[in-house]
Image (cartoon, rainbow, N blue to C red; front, side):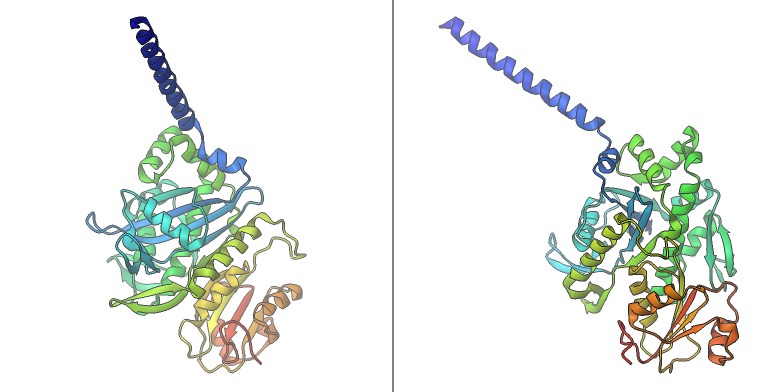
Length: 406
């Protein structure tokens, strides 16, 4: 009997040892897996959340949040701007509030999870910069180049001014550029400004990717960015993102109806969130699908001007065209707000393209090469622009927010 008991105990210990050894092997194997490699092997779109934080240590909130979707095989990418004022039901506190209420700089997963629910996708990676570290990263990559359509003559941060045209921002100017606030600037114009900087940052990181692989530089960069994967995976992620064709990136914002809840204005996505999920699905499919248009891969630049009294019409229309892959380089108000008809001004020389552009909103009122037309209103709009886009769209009273109605 004693021998049988010994044998049973020994067998039990052996089984436990085998299970423990198997657990160790499984854990080590799991740790060795490269999440980026797994994502690429699966031939999937890489979804990366970028957050730029602002605020003191007691109240850190996202200054801006972007979801970057990228498909390496076609080198195409799209970006979704997630406003902090996006309204949702926060289950853990059982109330409706801003999405950035759930943000915790020590643990980004709950915030990313809410964004996944809004967009209807899975986020693979996250990259977080504080505003201060963003400035240091900008200096590390020797500046970010971007086009500034209108000069800022008011002194910002006591010493910084921005002139119009192509500029290369150093770290200090980059921090001011994405964080300054002007009373006369709308939220959508401020958001548009930050979006343009983000694309410039992604482009510059790609250009400097080999430099960032230098061991000493890599250590500095890794200390400035919080990336939720190991060092090898982080290097692989930025290797992949370096392939983005930034000239073909579409930028979209999560828009919706603004409602006041508990004294604060919240944005609730259109159609109970179904529209933005459809846009995300269409965008993802577009990244994977080879180009079929005879226009090739060229991205046409567009300026959208509001010629009506409807507040925010230019911004919403710009978002609509971004969904169709056009590069919106400027939005604003026209020289007057009583345009009866919507006008498309074409400078591209591509009749096929401009017709396709007009078909998006069912507009056939097209004028070609603005210098050949002596229309005072249009000249006043464009005369001070150093750079003229392929298309200028002036919205009139015949536009209902989606289509031209007459």
